[in-house]
Structure formats: structure tokens, C-alpha cells
Length: 226
Image 1: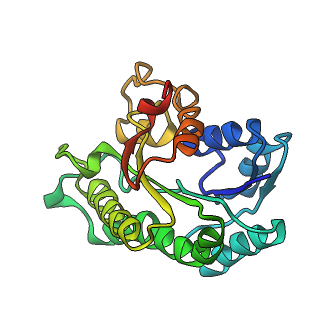
Image 2: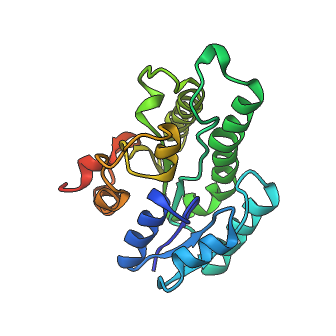
Image 3: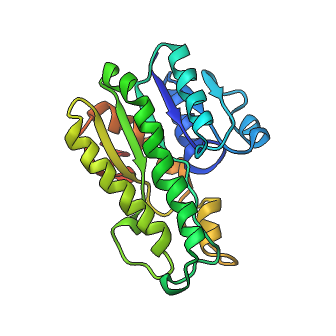
């Protein structure tokens, strides 16, 4: 039974990816900051180990790695946890530097640190690393400068990691615009019901894992019928 870590799994895409993996027979170690919300979200899912905590905490990252060791190894790391930054989204000229530091701490440094800790187990399993990204990393959308800059930095780290670790699959995975709490926070007061739910694209992860394309940028929706 393969094992995955999925961060930020109490709601949204992280929760749907967890459901997808457990439905396919995976063991999944999940985290989120809110212990009660995480427990309620994943309660009843088979093979799930919930480890509540903040992924920016070194001690918490060690807990996630220890949980994987206790299962016998790690085949997949999904770095999904992230933060939007200020809401409403400010322009670059008005972006608070403290908020940008927080975005980079959560969206760049934390996933890098967790990936570094997980690397020995992933190498042993010839496993995969998923870095959940966004089209804001590659396109210039007004208001998305801070979040986009963080995702662009994460993507570049992933590209280089893929070049350095040929035995691993390292994918920068763009899920597209989804109907999530974070996306609603980006558009406060607006109707985002036209965006698809995360459950509509999450199953694409299984095809991605099965086909195992070369490391690089992928759109999750492209793998629904692959």
C-alpha cells in the first residue's frame, strides 16, 4: 500500500486529493492548522493519519516525516498547503512587505523544507513530489503579485529539483481556478459559483501518477481523461 503526505487537507483541493488517493487504496498522512476542522474533514476516510499543525513549523514538519517513517516509507509528497495573502488583493505598489514574507514562508520555504526532509524516503521509493501551483505563477493578473511571485519561486525550485533528481518525478501541478475558500477570499463579495469544485479535477492525480510523465509543469484537468 503506497503512502502519501498531503498538506493543507482540511478543505478544498487538499481534501479532495486525499479522498481520491484513499479511494485508490493509498495511506495518506494529512495536516492542517485547525485540528478540529481536519478531524471532521477526514474522519471516516480509510487509511488516513491526521497530524494537525502549521507546515511553517519545523517541529510539525518533523512530525509529518516521522508519521511516514512509521508507515514504512513515502511514495508521494503533495505540497498543497498555502496562503493567499491579504484580502482584498492589493496592488504590488501597496503590497505590505510583512504579508509578502508570510506568503513566501508558507508557499515557498515550508514546502521546500518538507521536501528536503522527505527526499531520502522519496528517493528510496523512486517517488513523486507535487508542488501545487497556479496560473498566477506564469501570468500577470492585477492584484496577484504577492501570491504569484511565491508560486513562481516554488515552480522554479521544482524545475531545478526535477533536473537534479532524475529518479524522482517532480511536478508543478496547476489545478486551475476552483471554487474554494481561498479563491473566494481573492474575490470577496463576488459570486464564484461558475468555478468548478475541486472534486471535479482531483481524480486526474491518479492518471498523472499512473502515466508518470517527465518532471515539469502539468495542468490537473489535462489528466482527467489521460
